[in-house]
Image (cartoon, rainbow, N blue to C red; front, side, top):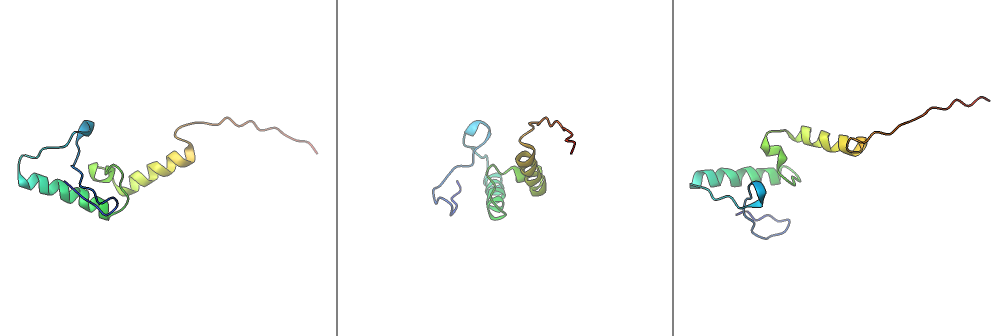
Length: 84
């Protein structure tokens, strides 16, 4: 279970599908809590993607590209020459 200042409610560490993870031993539970705690202290990590193999830079770049590129949408532009 983790409890952070943003909402002050205890929450379990969830796995795939949103089911709580049951740890086999204290060491693996401690490691998981430390990963999530460090992710919380290092910034606003909604899904803790930074601790799942990519870096903070990669996640921020992907978010910026999605914002500026419109999530993969393309816009057709036609140039029309105006004679003065």
